[in-house]
Length: 501
Length: 128
Image (cartoon, rainbow over all chains, first blue to last red; front, side, top):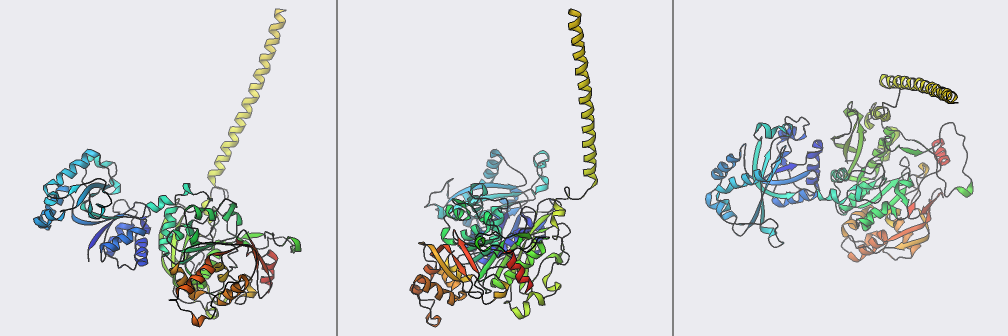
């Protein structure tokens, strides 16, 4: 099986391998890689981290398929030679390949050479120097250099690449100390990752937006983790402005969304969730939205959704709400005539309850093998037992972490339904805490963690208060003195006028 | 609300669990969309449908469709096309849904069904 080199994008290192595996599963591709390399791929330590990973797959077509979906892959190369120096690459090309093979390889083909680097940058002159060094190899005996291949040429166009890996921790030092790269690779670029879709669904180009609209890159990753593909049926129970179902529709699924807040889904007649679908030409992939409360969902309890992809409210930007009586209110039935347009009272919906209901919904309505993908807020105190669980669902991964501040971040949790829901066994009242997870979870009261400055009195804010008071006191005294000065000067003036008279 | 959504829905009350469907449709405004036939999706959704709901809709909107599930075949493209156009092309804009079990009426406005219960109904649910 041929070996290929992946160059991942720099951000979200903990998502890389999970997205790759999910995308491979969408196309039923068998991907093999060395498990020991994962440590470097997922590491946050600049000393050892690297975005390069070797994988083996069956064919080049598989690589192209993977690249058509994965957003965390920059490009994939088939490597011809690797070394720690550019000169080493020339030696390896000579040793590894037959001269005849090299000189015949480019017959009737066009090519272009690129120089790419990680952790450093080359200017045009340096790039050209590197390219000219390659001239010694017989690879360039044939073939024509073309910068912009025409459509007829594109099948026989080869993109050669010199890839240098300096590592991110040496950034800036490279030029001054003439440091050597960690690795230099030379090979063919097979395909580019699906970064274009991020631009296509850019938030600033989207007409209808909300405060909680999800970043397109993360939406695409979530859809990939949910194995969304053509012909699927996808639900987002906390749809908001519909970022997830928009990209799910882009991947060919039919989508439906629910929300408790009608204003989140449609603000105006000509600017709402549906017009976003129209703008992207996806109306035929959109089934509609339902106004409902997720604590009592409006579904027939049957396996029907292929995936549920969602970002539940966790009370930081959007507070979670459910229909119910506020405390200290009397029971007053709604008058008959006002019932149609009645907007019910809402009470807070605690995050552990949101998660428990979401998992129950997934257990009941997903098909077996279908995936539930959701974002869970976490703090550094996160532990495995915080995660909600359900006997019908199996955890695939919860290690994808987006760090937002040093106090909190959010995890992309992926689960798979493994068992059909049976009301007599999986009824909520029959399950114990151990089955449901969330043992004293850290996401129980997240507001206190995120808005710690505003909550409670801590020393810093006290000091600030004192400083503020002293400044005010000082200002008051100053204005008093000023007033006195003005009075004195007035008196002086009067005296002067008297003297003149 | 497209008919497929209707087919997947049920009354939200806890007391109606397992009995609150198919919801009875009243429709004052509807549109018929023209969309391409989606074979993969129709095939995927076919085993998940509630045929009592399809029967209800076909009677309501006078759309003839073969309801005897034993005679259906996934190879019969004509049948799948009719099914797809019934499920995805017909859209109810204004109207209401009624639960066959508790007779609760859910309004549909601007194509969005309002499945929210009133706070006192939730209160009743908890009491029961």
